[in-house]
Image (cartoon, rainbow, N blue to C red; front, side):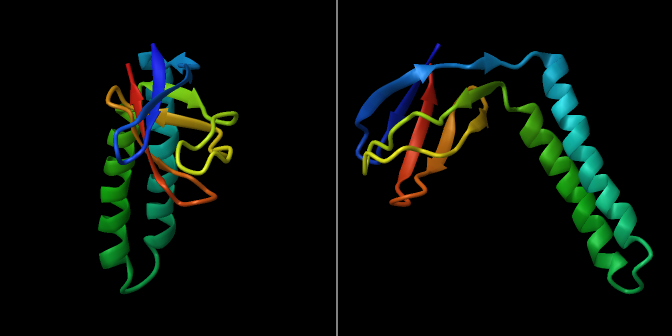
Length: 119
């Protein structure tokens, strides 16, 4: 599978090969780590009087949201040596996790919206 970058006008450029497709076990480890971090923050705000009525439900919802986002991430792509299609500068994203549909990243130099497609 290849990774394609495109600008808002739809010009597609082939970037590189997928670095790794995550197995279900790797995805589950990512879910547990992310969920455990936010669940731990929930325990820390529990003894705060007054604020815990707002923060505990907020962190519990964040735990579920992070778990779902991490479970849907199927691919890890290394975007270090890839150039932005808008300004030509190097994208300094490192390893980025995407689902089957790809996603959107932003160039750190020109703040252009770069669509990442996997296929």
